[in-house]
Amino acid sequence: MPPLTVGYDATAAVTQQAGIGRYARELLRALGHLPECFRYKVVFESRGANVPLPQLGDQFSVYPIPASDRLMNAVWHRARLPIPIEVRTGRIDVFHSPDFSMAPSIAPSLVTVHDLAFEAVPQLSYPSLARYLHRVVPRGVRRARAVIVPSSHTKAEMLARLGTDEGKVHVIPEGVSGVFRPDSPADDAAVLQRRGITRPYIFTHSTLEPRKNVDRLLEAISRLQTSEFPHVLLLAGRLGWLYEPIFETHARLELGDRARFLTDCSDQELAALLRQADLAVYPSLYEGFGLPVLEALACGAPTVCSGNTSFPEIAGTAADLFDPWDVDDIAAVMRAVLEDGDRQAALRRQGPVQARTFTWERCARATVEVYNAVGQG
Image (cartoon, rainbow, N blue to C red):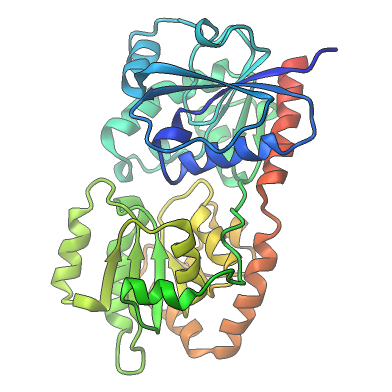
């Protein structure tokens, strides 16, 4: 039997630096390192592409579409013109869309759905994006032969909210890049010096948007900071949507330099900042997976995070949990870890052990099993 030819939509990989873009790139890279004899046809909308694809081997062929993601979504999902992806790629045996929505394809298809925030907490999602996902995701899930989700929490949400057939939903957790590790190949101190950062500090990294709950984190920090806790809060991440209230809260609480916003951090810088942090904190209100928590654990940062949605699955016992809706609880859990050197040391040990159970190789191997099932089914 000839090897399967898998079509792979890499649009998110070349247009999104973090989040789903990272998933699409890292999975693609890991697929290329597996010994399975697959052929891959990688397709993406090239207008607006600003992130390079990973280096790909001879089993990959690349097919850019000279159009924007917005235009092709309008063609495929608004006008619903069923122009199959094979018009660009030629024949394929399986088609994988790793970013919520599926382009039309003649081949049996699968889709990765990263979370159901657009259904569960639409008020915390970007309105036009939530409306778009509400329209296209259920339609794509019904059409797909298989659906990949990153956590058991997301699978349960999908079964409850979309009535999806349980048998076609596959839980495949994401992995963590090798950049995020407890031992530094370079000088972390140089990163801190270049950024003008001195210890001690508390660290978080995420997009600044309502779902990330930064407002309550700032409130908790303002209650925590005393002469007993001289820690600065460092917030690394790009601006998302409706970020203005975050800066209004920062000004109202008169936090000044006690809460600093960092932009344009490379992965290497993020890893260094995590390793040197006294505490990493993630108060998100809803996550389908929670890659920043996994990155913090991998670096050995003592970590505290929300105790809801998917975070308990990711963190296990390697992080302490709080109620993200309760500012007092966020502050209390942070305080408890900062006051307890033994607990900090235990979390530093446990984090990398927990993170090692999440690898992109494991993610890729499980994904290949789904490709085989879909292609041979």
